[in-house]
Length: 426
Image (cartoon, rainbow, N blue to C red):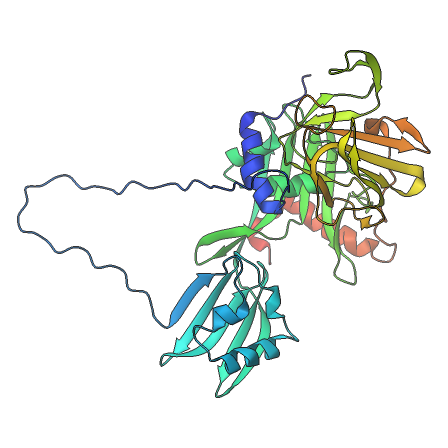
């Protein structure tokens, strides 16, 4: 069967959807993030003979007691609050927030609201992320600060799909956003190589919360279970939290779906050249070993560490261009060549975690176009990355296994249609 390559539309979704979502930045490429907005044509009623000249519709009047804005790049808390508070009061707000959420951590793009009573400042709300917000209240001449959970209207849905072109495009055909494709791929990243393993007819089923505020979709919440059938093999993943509240995914028997290494160091692209010890070099025009897998991808695509490791090298090589070498446990090394640039702070000696962005796809060194040359060594000898079998992470503990199986059976009942989705409680 023919392995699916990523179409142009998939690449566009990657570049304009996922990259913005993951908030990566490449130091060597232009930071163009123009997003086209749909303009709805105003409905026009059938033309009628003019009678009398009617007055224009009044402009909507904003409530002057509620000011909603967004933090702009370079804004400080003093600048935001200084419009409504005296400098001494601004400092008092900064001080009271220090133990709850330091205001020097505010980020561009995050929304905030100022409430006024009788023309004076009464309350300030800043959304830290999609889960919680900082709330500052004025009580007489004093201020209080606390964190509050953001309340959403939650729906619980089962989403079924079949692979016909690419995961991104098939998720989009269902009316879902690229975020769901990313989250699904992240769950099964240790079992399925979404670059080269997908086949027409592969299927997936996902249980996921959808969050709404004032009727507007605000993203996905918990994703307690998912099934992916790839080339006839069924993979299941069930979310389960330990006593500390850390949530991981496990298969039906309680084994972790995570392994020591990811199946691939980047998502949703294509293999342009495989592991070949007798390949004709495209530039030098001589037979040379190519102990690597080449992943063709747009310049600037984030490259991730396949496993937790120490950075052994991050710099320039004549043929490799910008490249990174990571040293893992068990005698393994992984190498990432031809990068356009490095992630911030990337240098020899630092520790990186599995899935952390370490650089960006480029075409530096001996390269005919943008791609990632990915290599692995075991005990100093090159090995085929596609054939490295990595050990799994820790399973569910024996003590909590009965509780896990109880949850697993509930999620399976939803997945199989044996339990109505309306019975779900967020």
